[in-house]
View 1 (cartoon, helix red, strand yellow):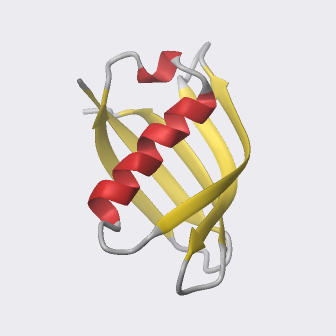
View 2 (view 1 turned 120 degrees about the horizontal axis):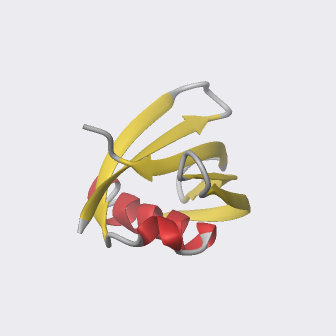
Length: 95
């Protein structure tokens, strides 16, 4: 298992969150959609365990050559609030 960092920006409010999560060592070698899914499973389990959260992914791509970052855009869907557009960047956690 390895540590990863996700930075999520909320396009509606301008707020930003930084989240560390653990996943398989080869996470960034997987497709961008699977990388995002691993983070969203962490969000569902650890960040919002009592609130049903879903998401719609509009785009996801990986920069594997130099920076090893997965970037994604989509919408968080809350049961009790309006959908929230987001920008997400995931990379290995730096010490």
